[in-house]
Length: 367
Length: 110
Image 1 (cartoon, chains in turn orange, green):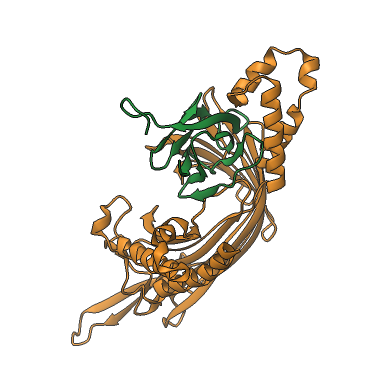
Image 2 (cartoon, one colour):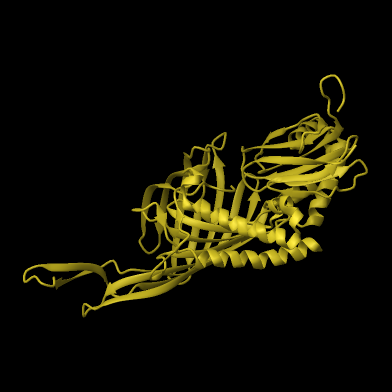
């Protein structure tokens, strides 16, 4: 009970700290790359400040002599860093993502400044361009009661097979191979398989809001700057089928993009009769694009040791009535061995043409 | 003999494993999750069964190790750490019996 109450109070305070980070972010800039020495960058200062304030709150709320517990039992973690061309602040539960718990994270990100080691989330004009607030959640695949039943079943099965000290899926398979079919049929193997299917099935939701400003000229050569907030929301379901993973999702999105046609306006430089200063911007207001896509993806391994992962994706956009097909083949790995790229082929009904390319992406997760 | 914190540490990719600890009577032991470890309190002579389920990607390795947090007691188990590879079903599971024993030091018991 006390832990629950503490958790709620901590939620409010973590939000407060998060807000404080946002409001003071003009001064507290996120800097440096993830692989830089921690002491050399201000990002560490942001993380340390957040952790310090938060732990201080935890200690205050639980008593001064519980400082050790405060470090270990913080219900939430705030992390900051740079990766994949973005500086990000991430907020998530400190406890690990379990099969019987819902996992979520909230993050704020902005593209890194290529010309500087420092990336600002705000500037004198307000929020930084292309600032994105996102969230993701994966609901618990199984309930506590189901997990308990699985343990009961596994416990009984291990004992029945005589695997008293060590028992696992490999040892069970080996033990079953020596039994006759009647004996195997009397064991609770289907219950185990059913639970594994549940554990490999999950619902997920996610979304993001993207803040951006778009500068452009109108046809009278007047300069405008429009602020737009794009939005993206998705929900879906994924499940394991044997060694493959099938998922479907609905993605609704409103996005903005600058007109590709550029226009140039040249004005006389003050004090000079011959010089001109020219500025190039998009011609016309940013285009607003809405899409609502249904996507179905089937991801599976190929090759004897899972060398390749194929992930065919079929989608249909209800707004534009466009069908699309994409077939990425992952085979390039990063230094940690994660699949992170390969080649892909794609087709869209509006273009009616195949496109092939080599790609690098975020490390592939959860086949 | 005082109770000490026993930690079940996990190394591997993807979602953390579902872990359950049961004592010899079959009763679930209350566990806590701290920084990627599952912990509980135990003393010398206690016997437990550790159950795990790991859902991940085929062929990924995972490792589960049992230890006394301040190294005061020893853990006796047939396998410790438990090092496994996730099979084609994308889920690895099992049970390991272990007991908490008195730590042996040079020539005499602690």
